[in-house]
Image (tube, rainbow, N blue to C red; front, side):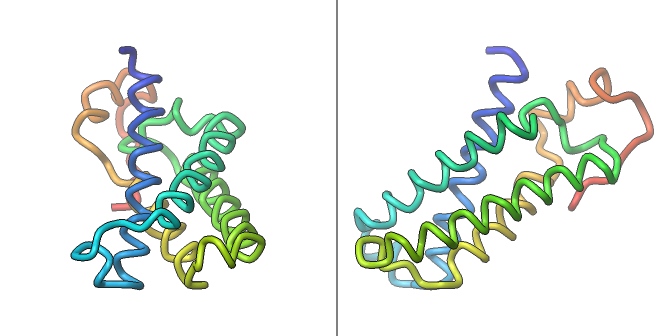
Length: 139
């Protein structure tokens, strides 16, 4: 698997994990009871939204350990747009999702932080992609 495909899958996994973590923060009993179907539905919608935004903003082509502020701005815009879309979808599908209103906001912030952190599998290839000395990671 090439670096772009692995980065794409890593970003989607981190975005999905941020949604699951946001639910776990809002409803702490979620983990012990099991993950309900509506949470899986929210995660599926969230990942589908991020797939579209990954393609639109080219996030999968970035390695966030060595980037500039402008690159982090692109990530922030994508995370904010995904948060707004998921917030709107939360209102539309409220009866089915039973979504606490703070989950999309928490998921957006967590997604930005998780995707913006420097992750070890990406460190090795980042020097050749963006050049040395540019480090503006979120973490």
